[in-house]
Length: 543
Image 1 (cartoon, rainbow, N blue to C red):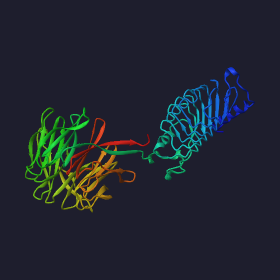
Image 2: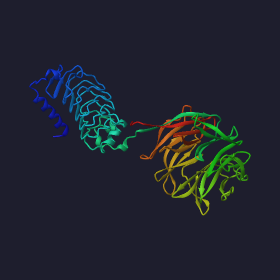
Image 3: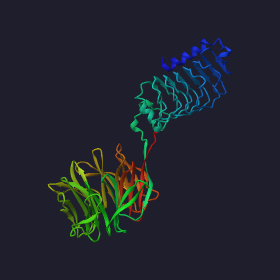
Image 4: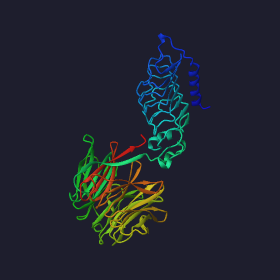
């Protein structure tokens, strides 16, 4: 015989043994109407409310087929000595906070065969002696998180016979079952359809997807921009925007008083296309790539000093730069600048030791009008992926102090830009196509192979970002909404998460992420509108 069944049998025996109708003496109280009472127990049938007038020494109470609609706080304060409480075949549908307050000696609580559809998370608070609990055969579709918190003495729990919806609201119960030191009967799921008739104790918590992500508008920042970079300098987060129409690299910092981003400093840079920062201790370098007037390196030697121009960069090679990226090679920082003109060349610039500037380390292929450069690592070796207007993306490998062509990306014509991300041991690339479908590919050890195709007419940016453990991929568009995808490792595909906005980014050219003051923000640099800032929000659906 199970523990709960044995306890209920004990209650019936107590009631039967007192069935001779032994009444209390007047000074000890009277037996309320609709109740049959003995010295230590009472059975109440059809009561219009929770009966009152019991002596404080009552040990067991059974409330059957009552007309009570709601168990409110302190419903049993007049019977503090109860050891056993049975509530069955009643019409009440809700059990509120602290409904059993004051019952610190209660060991057996049976709430069965009622119409209960809702129970408060604090309904059982204070039942520190409770060993046997049954909520069997009610109308409960879920149970609130922390319902059993503080019930350290529980040894038997019965939840069977409820039409549980096994969704995120019950994830806590699925996690609780294997950890609790008690015998628990939970029964089967009534839904959703894929889980119908599955036993709760056999559910895999990993099949629950109970964490949702949302990007919500936070701030608008002035002028259009072609690029945005985020970085940390001397322990503080910074943002720099490449604003060609305003002719500057604009630096932003977080205003802790106003809780907003504000301008901090700027570099005059007419026709700028990229502002790429590099932090080396207290020194800050910024590569300023410009369409006209030559590209420059600006630097700040230490805190408190302003940025100033320090070097002209490969004026004979960088005639019309389109992209600039930072990478580390043989322990030294380098910049690679993608050159889109036929007369110029994509150029690798590396630092010539401490205290020195950046020199031309290597010129890559000419005449191909490169539009984008993406540094990445494959099998522990530095690589470089170049997208060009005249050929498929080409992969280069760093060997013996130089980049050498390794392979190209098959079936990837007209790719404007490339970005990569890693999931576990896999390296994946996002290939942006303005007139065709953008693609996600996975490196198989020798080449990139197609994983997924996404319609993307009008897109010049397809960028992955890892934010708070979520691998997001953003697909910008000049013609329609920009889309936010989330990578699902278990299926190896991108799943649409949301449309970005409102406000909708207008011709986005770059995305970047920064964490500041315990909050997470996404910046979108827009060519036909102001820069927009969105806050990354996480909602736990199991709460």
